[in-house]
Image (cartoon, rainbow, N blue to C red; front, side, top):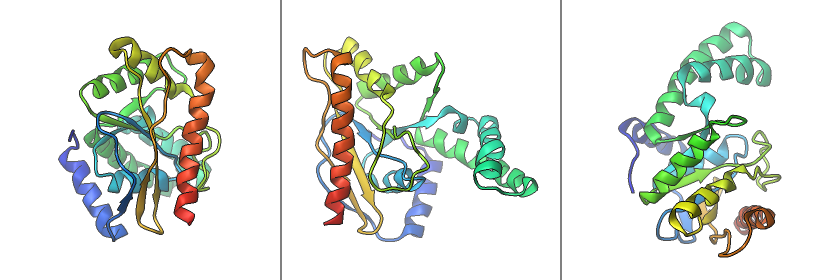
Length: 227
């Protein structure tokens, strides 16, 4: 289902022109609402899929980037000054401009704020399930080392798997997690096989298996792109 706003579509159109050739699709998107999983690869893992996914998705985004003031505090206080080492006057201007843009783009894309380390994470899970119940898709990037530029994914957070618990409680069916990978060199978007929890199995006993299947699924797409 389509939900992207005009501003997001405008920005996406500009990025598509900048990056050039349209991406080919390798794989098949399942019918119905799914959660698509990829990894940051610093910034490439979010920009390329959001540009070329042929379906609309609600991406999970750190809550600090969904609010203009909070985004400025994050970018000025850490990203531009500490991580990138910009002089403070330049970092201030850059953060002012970027925070306005980030908050506007994320709002227009229908992003879901992620309240990491807070009880408000329940709102993230609730909103995710509500969108899926409407037939809308979700995208999550759960890699722990989001600054890594490696193609293969390493350790993943497991908290997002709790979406399945809430979704199953309300709908008596499990969520399908689908690995994806965008290769900017081959201009190809790879879609893997869905995986997830099985009927009758314990969440706590099976979450390690599911997270491993997701991780292996993404890395298999990376290997496929190298052939």
